[in-house]
Image (cartoon, rainbow, N blue to C red; front, side):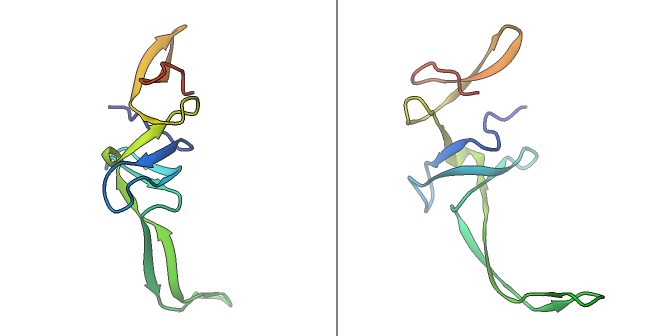
Amino acid sequence: MGLKIKRGDTVEVISGNEVGARGEVLRVDPAKSRVVVQAVNMRKKHQRQAQTGGQRQLPGGIIEFEGSMHISNVMVVCPSCDKPSRVGIRREDGERVRFCHNCDDVLD
C-alpha cells in the first residue's frame, strides 16, 4: 500500500514526547512504516574514534542524529490552511493527487 507522506512534506507530531513539533520529512521507510523528521526525535550515539585503512580517521565523540518514528505519529501540514490534516487521494486528469481533507486543496 502506498504511503500518503512523502519526503519533503512538512509534518506535525501528534503523539509521543515531541507533540506539536513541526519539521520536514527527510526519509520515508515504507517497509517499516517509519519516517525521519528534521530536528525531531533527536538521538545521541557515543562513537569511538576509528582509523580506516589509509590516512583517514573517523572522528569520535557524541554524534546527534534524528531517530525514526512511526508514520501514524505524524500528520501532514497543509500549506494553504496551515493545519495538520488527513490526506486523501483522488484522480485528476488520470493522475493520482493528494489533497487536504480540511480545505480540499491539492498538496502536490
